[in-house]
Image 1 (tube, rainbow, N blue to C red):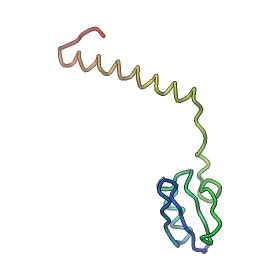
Image 2: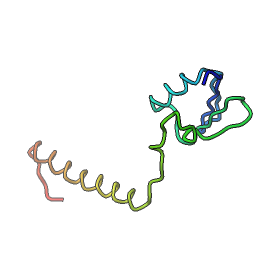
Image 3: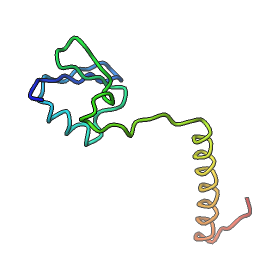
Length: 96
């Protein structure tokens, strides 16, 4: 793939390029390309970055609501234990 490529960022629509495809793969490996960013080899036709198999962005997927709730609950519980631990360390342990 010696063609010149363009990267369009989803957040603000800024476009980078033209650059060699090797530069695109380096950006993807460094997590500088998000799943909603788009790529083009001609500046006219744009595709979402995960649709280009050479980038190896198949990690991009959906997170379901139940998983998010479990993660929020885990952070909540961790925060309670962390607060209790800090109070014990500071000699000001109080029951929550």
